[in-house]
Amino acid sequence: MFPSYLRLVTPRYLFLLITVSSMLVTAGCKQQEPLTGKELASLLAEKIDIILFDYHDANVAISIIDHSRNVVIHGDGNRLFHAASTMKVPVMIELYRQEAAGYLSLDDSLLVENQFRSIVDGSVYSIEDDSDDTIYDKLGSFMTMRELAYNMITVSSNLATNLLIDRLSADSVQATSERLGTLNAKTVRGVEDLKAFDQGLSNSMTSRDLAILMEAIRTGIAVSPASDQEMVELLLSQFFNSMISAGVPREAKVAHKTGSITSVHHDAAIIYPPEDDSFVLVVMTDGIEDRIISSELGARIAAAAYKVLRGPNPPDGN
Image (tube, rainbow, N blue to C red; front, top):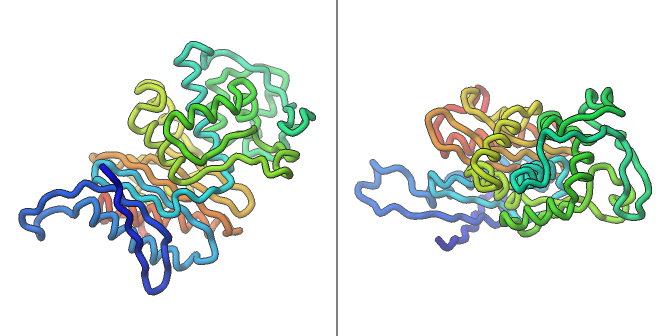
């Protein structure tokens, strides 16, 4: 169905351009029928506008894909952000794709070493900033790619990520993302290549593209239903849960990947409400130095989305 474009202006804040794709249900008695996709999207966009007024100095992009309610929203969805660790989602997809194609086995082992080559000049650099301490105890030994993928997703290990990218290649990661429908996201290198960073060669992501990847995983078309379910299990094991997870009811499961660097803070999630259909929510932010505040923003967006799309019971205080 062709998308329609809805521009919403509130007295206090403009939530840029919202793309709403909806299939309208013909009416019987309006008061007794559930809201249409277009009505749900409009209501949710109004609530998001009100929330974003409190963070007006930040750049925020929000994407929601909820086909069970006929709602697709992209608020500033094509804005490019530093990808931070959300780039590990396409790396994970490419890893499983190469296994499915017979190029590797997840049980193959890689030597754990902390030496990588810059894409600028081939000079050697090492990972110095990492959220995963345990992998460094294994320097000089071997880990399976399954183990590395677990560390990359659940604790956002930069060392595990670079080891996998060296095996897969950034070009392959990019090509697979594009085949799945991404338009603007770029995976050009591993993590902490400072020479590349200084030359503006960084991994970038949009909320729309990240939502497309998460939706592909959700629906089992990123690689295959079996491989995608394994990826969902990894995402469900995420250790960092202060953003989207904090905004939905405790009984809802959240398969997600976070990413943060300096004033950048993102979260991309598949939300599994109990006894209802899952949906995708992506929140990307830049310009908020305090992670507590950016986490609060993400949680408030998640609470609003869940309440509008799935019911009235967000966590206490939201």
